[in-house]
Structures are given as C-alpha cells and as structure tokens.
Amino acid sequence: MSPVRILAIDGGGMRGIIPAKVLSHFEYVTGRRIGELFDLIAGTSTGGILALSLGAPQAGTGRPRWTATDCLDFYQTHGPTIFPENRRAAHENLLAQGVSAIRYDAAPLEGVLNQYLGATFLSESVVDVLVCAANYERRRLRRFISSEASTAVNQGHLQLDFLMRDVARATSAAPIYFPAAVIPCRNNAQQFELVDGGIVANNPSLEAYAYCQGKYPGEDLLLISLGTGSPSLSSYRTAAAAQQTAGLLRTPELVKVIMDAASKNTHEKMMELLPTTLCHGGQCEKRNYYRLQTRLELGIEQLDDSRPDTIRKYLDLADELIEDNRDQIDVICHRLV
Image (cartoon, rainbow, N blue to C red; front, side, top):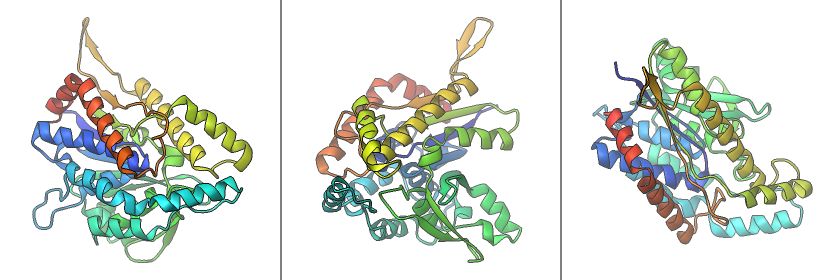
C-alpha cells in the first residue's frame, strides 16, 4: 500500500522562495502539479500561503490552479510591493530610537492574496491543506484544515469555513511586521483575531503528523519537510542583544530567531517519531521522513528582504540545495508518483 504523502513547509517570509523553487523542481521531475502529488499540504506563514495556493482549485477542472513555478513568481513579482525597502529602513530607524511599531501596511499583501486566492473558500481546496495560525491574545495554535471545513459545510456548519485569502492573511501576520488579522467565518457569525502561526509552529511537520495519525490510523506516512533557510549563529547573538534593549518579540531579529528555533525543535522531534530509515532483517530501505533545509549566510536572514540581489541569492541557495540532494530528491519524486 502506498504511504500517505505529506508536505510540510516552514514559515520564513521572502525566504519562501527557497521551498517554492525546490517544489518547482519536484513538478519538473514528476510532470505533475504539487497539489496532485500529496495527500496533505501543511504550511505556516509563508508556507501557509504556499499550501493554500497549491490547493486552490482551477475552476471547472478539479485540478490545482497554481503551480509551484507560479508561486515562485508570487515572491519575485510581488515581494517588493509587500515588503517595500523604504518602509523597512524607516522601521529600523524607529527601533534604533526605542520606538516599537508595525513595520508594514497589510493592504498590499491583502491585495496580492485576493489576486491569487480570490473568493475561494478553504473547503474548496483540491488537496487537503493544514494551515497554522495563532490566537492573538493567548498565542495558542489555531489550525485551519480544509477537509474538516468541507465536512462542516456539508453538514451546514458554515462557521467552520473561511476564505482562503483570510486564512493566508492570518497565518502570515508576523508580529512586528504586520498587524494582527481579524477574519470572519463564512457566515459572518464570528470573527477571530489571529497572528502568524510561526511563533508556535513555524515548522508544521508535527501538526501534520499528528493530524494524519488520527485521520489515517495504522497507515505508513511519508513526510517531506521543506525549510526556508536557517539563520547563522551571528543572528542569535544579534537577537540576544536586541532582547536586552527592546524586549521579547519587539524586534525582527527576535521574531526570526524564535521561529528558527521552533523549526529546529520540531525537526528533532520528527526524527524521533518517524524513522529516517526502515530496516527489515538487516536490510535497510526507504525513509519515512525527509527534511530539506539550507544555511543562510549573514545578511540575508531577514523575513522581509525583497531586494533583487537577495532574491537572487535565495534562488541560488535553492539551486544548490537541489543539486546537493539530487539523488535524494529523485527518490522522493519516484515515491510520490
């Protein structure tokens, strides 16, 4: 029996270029869209935007509307609009003066999400998607799952369904960078104030694993986890200094490092939960869990760096990641089809 195929994509802002490029290579090798290769796509923050985009339906076809290459274009074309360099520089000046403020207006991001996701509801996804956000006040995880939304809608419970674009806005509402998202459910009976799920589950692998354990009891799971690059040690030192002057979650450096630490902790846990190698009678074959991640050089770790030179570096890092793991990726692609 084929395993349940799970894709989990980390948060990381503009660094989402890295997993998007890796996924475009998956599509090239397999000849299929990502939404047709997996049984579940889980994502947080930028990974949540990718998950929703890859699950969004093409009208009248039952197929995914967007390819991974389309998603890659999302970052390259719209990144500078969502993260304008002048706002970034102005915010850094405010922080230097001890003033805490939201860095970006959410309107450009919301406009782009509307362009890509339109009036599509979570329940309409062509592949099961799981997106992580967090309750604003309690900082507790809030999961949005398309199959659960679909079941709820079929039973008349519209309050459990949401517009894809609103879920994308919620999962990407990173503290410091964007205001919290206030999103209504489908029948407008309730609304929820949410922030980026990266503060509690930046790597959604564990959430995806737990969900599939319940939905597919006893079945083999194949989980592919994609990172957005791990910051250098120097970033941790910068964050420690920032905490002394600005306090927890008041500087981008701290947000970045907290999210990276969360991703690493999840990876270590997944190594325990899903064996990386299956062994039978002394013969070892087939891994259940793959993690594709790269190291970021100093100066390109920020979540909001949309400069052309940085975008090129992210693309180059993705190409290096693909080349360094070509044999492993070929095995993954073979197993997915």
